[in-house]
Length: 466
Image (tube, rainbow, N blue to C red; front, side, top):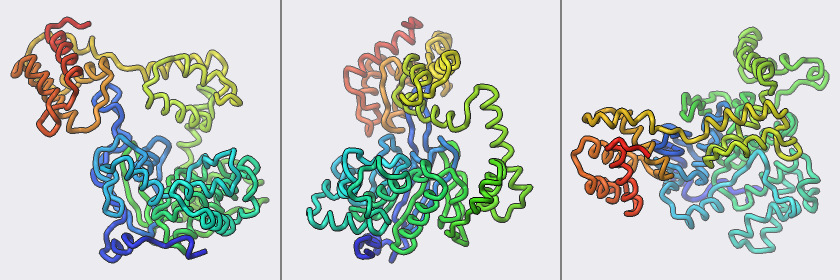
C-alpha cells in the first residue's frame, strides 16, 4: 500500500533539499466586484509559505476567507491578484489546459459535502479521477480496491453512496482524492457533516497520511479542537491572516469523553470540555469566559429573530451565492426563506421570510451613486478627492455592468477619470485612455465600451444625469 500512496515527487525532493517551500503565496488579493460600490475583499494581502510534508490548518469563523484561500491554492478561484507558486509554478498565470492538468495530477480535494456521484457505486466513484487521466483499466481498478481496503471501506465497493454513513462517504471521498497520487491534499471543512466519532476517525486518517506517507495536508476548519493536529495554524479574520502559530508539540491522540460522561453533561459543559481539550493551559473558569460571547450571540439570535446559529449559517451560505451572482430579485431570496426544508429552503413563516428577504435585497442591490456625486461634479472644481473619483468610477461600472480583472486596470481607469474631471484631457483623450492597452497606461476596454463610457462621462461633467 505504501508504494501506492506516494510520498512526494522529484520536484518536491529538490525543494526539500534546497529548503524551499512547496507553496509560496505572495501579495495575494481576491477581490469581487472590483471598483464597484459593492467591492469586496475576500482575501487581503496574503503572504505565506508551506513546505512539503507539513500539516497546515487555516482557522477562523465562517466568512473569514479560509475556504477562498484554499480554493485559490486549488486553482479554483479566478479573481486572483498576486502570485501562487506551487512547486515553483505560478498557477495564477496558467492556461486553462495547464490548470486542468494541475487539478488532476498535483492536488486532491476533500469537501464537507463529499460530492460523490449518486448514480455510480463506490468503486467507480473512486476510479473516476483515473479515467480522466487515461489510467489503464486493470491498474486503476486494482489501485481503487487497495485504497478502499486501506481506509476500511472495501466491503462497500459495490454499494451506492446513499447506502453509506457520513463517515464512510468521507472515507470514500479521501480514496478518490488520492487516486492520482497528488502532491497536496486540500480539505475544506471535511468534518462539518460528521458526528464526533466519524470526525475523529477522519482526522486520524489525515494524520496518518501526513505522518506515515508524508503527504502535505492543508485543512480548513472553524473547530479549535483539531488545531493540535497541525504543524502550523494560520488564524484568519476578514480575509487576512492575523496570526501564524507553530505547534511545538503535535498532539494527534483522540481525547473523548465516555458515553456516560457525554450524556451527563449539558450542552454548555460539553462545549467547555472541548475548549479545555483544545486549550489545555486554560483553567476551567478562563475557558468558561471564552464561551460567554458565543452563548450570548446564540441567545440574541433566537430571542430577536427566532433563528439558531446553524440556521443562520445556512442562510449565510445561500446569500453568499446570491451576492456573488449579483442577484437583486427579492422573489428568489423570499422563496428560499419561505420554502420548506425538504425543498432546500429554511421554512420560516411568511412575515419573517418577507422581512429578511427585504433586508437582504437592500444589501445586495447595486448601490446608486448618482445622487451622491451629482453636486460634486457640477461644481467643476479640480478633483483631488479620491472619494469623488471612486464615486464616479463606481457609477460608470455599475450602469455598464463592467467587471474589472486587475488592480492595474483599476488604477488606470481612476487616472483617466481624474484627468477628465480636471479637464487635463478632452473627451477624445479620455476615450483613448480607456481604449489603450493596460501596459500602456490604459484600461484595455474595447472601443465600443470606451465610447459609451466617454459619452456618459460627458453627461456627468455637464450635470445631466440620466
